[in-house]
Structures are given as C-alpha cells and as structure tokens.
Length: 87
Image 1 (cartoon, helix red, strand yellow):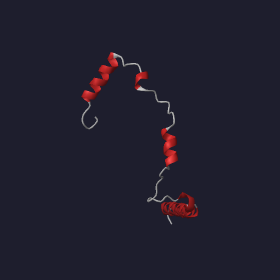
Image 2: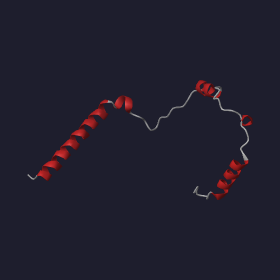
Image 3: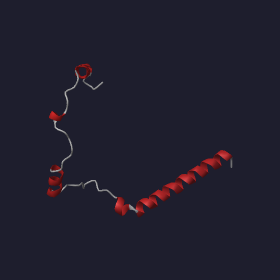
Image 4: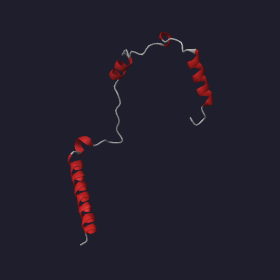
C-alpha cells in the first residue's frame, strides 16, 4: 500500500476507536448525565420567598449622583444616532 493510504487508514482507525470510546463512556455515565427535555426546575414557595427577601445590595436610584452634562449629551446623541436594527 502507499503511504497516503496507510495514513488515511490509520486516521480512520484512530477516529473509529475514539468514537467507540465516546459511545462506551456515554452509555456508562448516562444515568447521571441524562437530561430530560420535558423536565425543568420549578422552585418551591420557600425558595421563591427566600430569593425575594434577600438584600441584593442594589442601591436605590436616589443614591446615584446625576450624570455630568457632557455624558448626558453623549448618551442622548447615541440614542438618536442608533438605527432601528441596533447598528
């Protein structure tokens, strides 16, 4: 056989071996790695209450200093210059 044919055969065998190893690993660990598309996490009432009662450290709008005029003018120009598609 020619060297190129041996190279292609060797590459194919390497690919096939890797594929077989992935299939075996997938089947072996399928019990804990399987994700059912029809299921999703629904938090219970206690988890929702805990999240809503936490202090997230977000300051109120009154705590912020007003923007300088040059920055406000820049933001105004940017909002007017932006196209409908976001460009």
